[in-house]
Amino acid sequence: MATDTRRLNGTADKPVRADLPSAWHGKDLAGDESWIWRIAPEHVEELDAALRKSKEKGLAEQAVTKDDFEIPGFRKEIERMIHELEYGRGFVLMRGFPIDRYDYADLRRIYWGIGANIGPAESQNIKGELIQEITDLGFDYGKSEHRGSMSSAELRPHCDPTDIVALLCLRAAKAGGESKIRSAMTVYNEVLDKHPEYLPILHRGFHYELDGKGPRGVPDEVTHRIPVYSWHEGYLSSRFNQKALETGHQKIGQPLSELEQAAVDFIHETAVRDDVELSMTFEPGDIQWLNNYVMMHSRAEVDDHEDPAQRRLLLRLWLNHAGARPLDDDFCNRVLAGPRKGVIPRGPTYRPEELKHRA
Image 1 (spheres, helix red, strand yellow):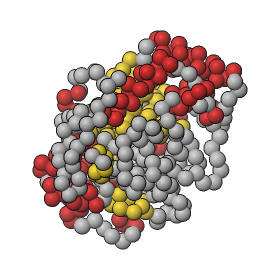
Image 2 (cartoon, rainbow, N blue to C red):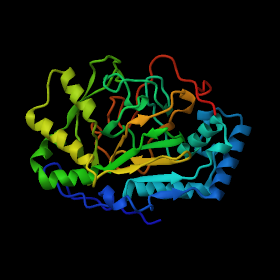
Image 3 (cartoon, one colour):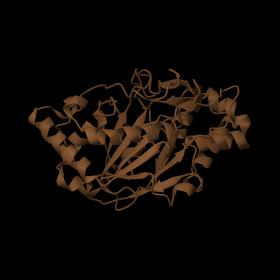
């Protein structure tokens, strides 16, 4: 497979347009299904065989490594997908994984095995969960300490901390809950074209609140300044979460200036424009893969079932991989656990065998 390593000759002092395949408009992809990759029957057979062998070895779910989960044919598809995330559009939706033929424990094991063929998983919360269930637990998104993914609320455009975020859909919502993605590179080009005066602010960045997930584990802990857009070795990368940065500045007593707020608002307003964002409805068996440095993702409000056993349920992985772009260490130290790291586990450790949503 040919590798496109084309870089940009831009810096924070001399910005240039991100004229790359990852700078797309949603309106141009809405009628194009080339970003939907069908999972082939022969790949399902490989996953079945890898599942069976890993269980025969008596390995716990998260003790399974790449060597324990051999999927040579599907591995080529994974490599093609990673290439698309790094040098193509920055996202892929895999469709057609037959989840009905597996119980919940086996679904998790297969998903973990696929992730192990990509790279190491990172902790997503202080419980140390490496696979996290995304469902409505009745959380209030308006509260800074509540994760929006555990609510039914509409979520604003944002990025997660690691190279890749993956979502496996086990159950769709009764209504709503559409995944909305957009190119952070397209948004950058809009800033460059229409409001270049915002760029120094966005390159300097903001302090993000950590919701008690930082090294000290206290509610008022915030990050150093993390750029919304970071140039490093010819790569342009993005980090944005409006709620977290606005609350972060409130917590340290440094409210955003008028110009800073205007820059942040412009990022949001551009990201949710109809011509910029791409909306997709997950089907059971879909796996969405996103490059966190070139994509921003969000979600529509969810109208779901009263019965928790019927509610929308996704499984999320935060992954890093060996072929990811170079990044500035400060830029990718997003939760103060180290470059490209997830949340530092604290307190009782999560046990995968304590499954809450058995099929």
